[in-house]
Length: 120
Image (cartoon, rainbow, N blue to C red; front, side, top):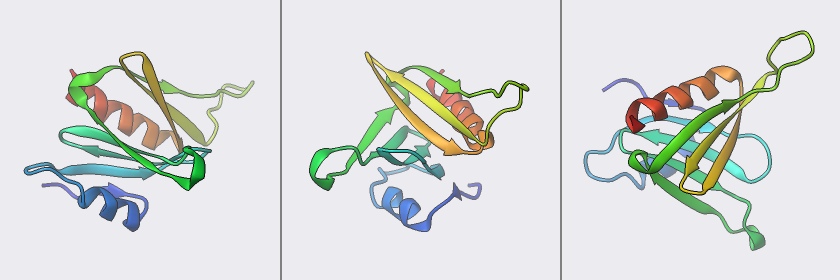
């Protein structure tokens, strides 16, 4: 098994505590912006922490790769054609689209590629 990539040890431990038998973590990335705390990728599913609920409630949403209908990388380009330092991944499941914003486009592309690999 290769080394797990993560930004925050506490987020990694939260994902570890909810693993299914035989499930392995690939990466856990901290998210920026309102609402989302982090995204976790395993060999079975995408796990998103959503902090946008009223009353300081937090949801952990598990999305099996088989339910992902599309995954997109959303990037802003400046007028000079250079990418900004953040990127957004959009994951469509049925009629709902989850958006997660990261620091650095490398994380965004890694998440996109892992989801695409397991969803296809």
